Image (cartoon, rainbow over all chains, first blue to last red; front, side, top):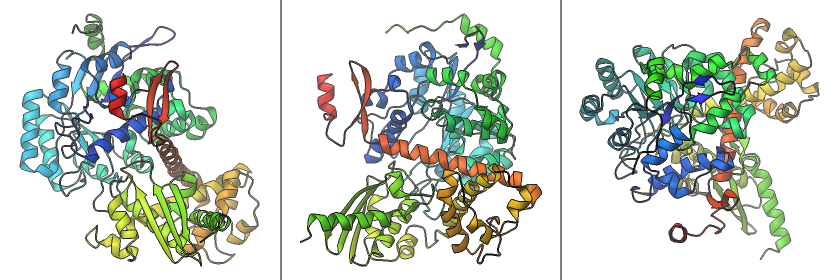
Length: 340
Length: 267
């Protein structure tokens, strides 16, 4: 719960968090090391100095750490934990659904754990989707299109095998497809960050919600063109939002673009924990105003009402959460450090 | 044996010609981005250039383009007979280094990594974005000083050449915009339109606001990515140390951070 200066209580649903293990013990090779190192560079580049973590803590944090950072020190009411497997890089997976679910079991009222699958597994991917639905009753998945798997260095959302998986998701009521467009390296003749496959998938699967993490960055311009045409395409603000501290004018430009093209009902807050922690992000976001010249040129405003939607109400709608009932439930179960 | 003075002069020449190699995605020179890490003149005709990108995962196809761009520009120097380019700490570094230093043409090296397909469609996409970005910078200057939409869309190349731009970004982009306009065949002589679309069409005066809207998106994305790349390049080799005054960032390439095991043992 974020409490504004004038005492208003804002429901915060953090749409993009991880419970990962990127420690050297879990790395399979140099790529695993370079993956977490890259995350760490994002962390050190954009965090306010007082929120910087040492490398070892960043690589692997505890169940107590995540609970404290999100809900005690942080203003989150709930958080969506994403699964990112990276099986060619990490022995036990980077953030597996099993490990995240086991962590989330301590506070099931606060966590939504999403699954993941790799369409290149064919039949096995379909089995995996059934397993995740039966075992963990998932409502969403995260797809990382740049995952390396043997000789393949990534895939597209509109590959035929991916479509079979989305058909099954639709049938089982797994409605929320979070997409992280990483660098899909092969074939080298294509743009590694191309987002146009989102357009095909969102058109062909109107029942599913397509949440594009990082708003398609580094292809924000292409993403905006797609999102303006598709009602079921959403933008996750992770990575764009931390600019609010280091480069607030860039953030203003980006959020103005997003409000103009994607719209206030289709944007979701995400801290990208543990790359960033939610407290400073939410505080700065609530205080943020789009500078007059940018607001005027784009004809958009970032009002309190819009901020409230972005911070929690939009995601609650996608995940079927009754916000008033949830607030009541959480006020009866205040945050506390679990006894060791 | 080169004297230090001559060596420094030659290295300066190499740095200068590297200013003409752009990051295709950001449309900014590698030298401005801080990607060039090392220029070394070995003897009177041999050069080595080392570069590093902001992350291990930066697009390999663009890494190839940058590596070959470095080779192409340095080879233009009359005294250079051999150039070695080295990309460090990159997921495709071995392939890029082998390819760029093999003496084979870019097309031949590149084709082997994508079943014979070429890179033309992608380079074209990013040339178009660079064109839009450069065009917007000069257009904004004209709009700011109150030129009407009708006047802007019908401006000729000759008039463009005679225009003194005021805005810093516009002054910088004017020659770069002109260069792309001509090299892509969108204008040839002074009577041609200065501001066609990338498809070579005249912009209707009434549609200029929509045209600006699109260009704006391209610029914001590019500027954001540029800021991100600069930031990541600056922190890629740094780690946090928690001292009495709180956390600070320390460069570990310079050997100022003790090895991890030692740090843990001390902690």
